[in-house]
Length: 299
Image (tube, rainbow, N blue to C red; front, side):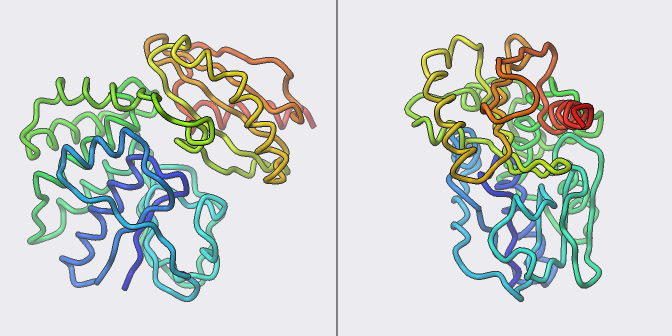
């Protein structure tokens, strides 16, 4: 049985793609099961509810020497324990090629698009006799709108936009009204503890000699999270120490203002004060290159 999953602290793209890819593998004669590597965030719960799909179970079994298929990541540090000992037979991703090394050839698709779901749609619709259901089309649509921030992110491509329109037709939903509802769910941070706010969307990175976590919280406007900032700053300090990081970066993104404010744990070589950067929405395309440049310049 092939275990299909995305990265730790899963976002909508990693969860929704795992579900659709596992179904595609089963239909094409390769038994597979979708899993998640953490708790669902409110946005993903909204998408699953709209699509009337159950959440994948939490990955709890040992994957050493077991066949696995990765979606939405290729960094070992973003995966489960023993990923480096598993048999990675497939990969579908839209990020930089990470630290994954395989012992055998694998089926791999890596493209410069705004969302893994865009690739998944292209793959499954070019598979003979495979029929994408309206429910699964809605999953992929939700993932694309999430990852591209409703096409506002600089990672968005024309292929993402065209795919989203096709998926809305298959899912039989109005694209504009569904987008509004999804963005409401995306920026809903009510009732979340400080720990869950950070875990909502954070990823482990190795940039040169620096081991760090880049967390992102998307809000309607900065004022929506002002009251939690002192506790969040205390928590990133604690996380940096407890997890042996060089430092932690928290990226708070205002969707209405199309800008991000960066908060750093104290043990960092860049700054001891928050930095606001206009037109920064993407961790992958904007924050990671910005950080890489800053860290390289520090040497």
